[in-house]
Image 1 (cartoon, rainbow, N blue to C red):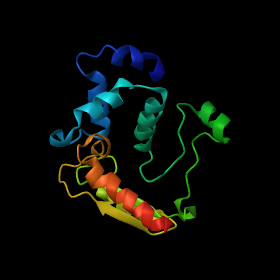
Image 2 (cartoon, one colour):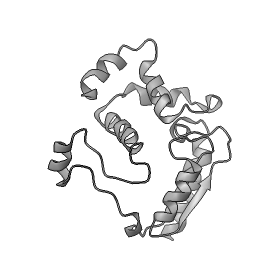
Image 3 (cartoon, rainbow, N blue to C red):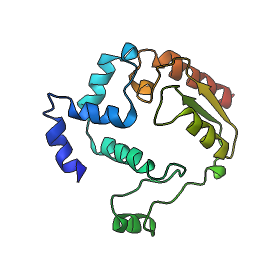
Image 4 (tube, rainbow, N blue to C red):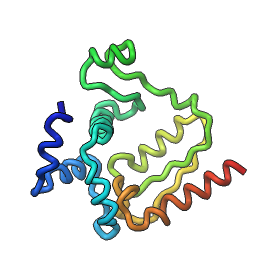
Length: 165
């Protein structure tokens, strides 16, 4: 249902309703670090069908805070058709045995430091947890921050290269 009215609202959004909805759900990025060019490119395609699904998945995750699930459809019949059960299946993270790096920011309210500790302990392999050293780093900073390359992408690429050698 959201995909029917979201484009009508977000395409003509002088008050920033869509942006505020995203920020209310995921937390506003650190204003000092927002890359305006990157933000405008991302929001130019919002809401797309995938962004709506991801947004809804974050909302549904709030109802099941200690479960890591496949996509939860909006009604039981859709879940039944997709999965053969009323809700989406829970992933068994203990079955994942691949090198894993988890990044967490101190101001992230979606994937908090406690959440990352909890989920990293559930993995079938020891995760390398990296704490971003910026007290204002929130969930959207992983995308919007001017220094995301320095804080996230470069360390991630270095770790991936170490895994493959």
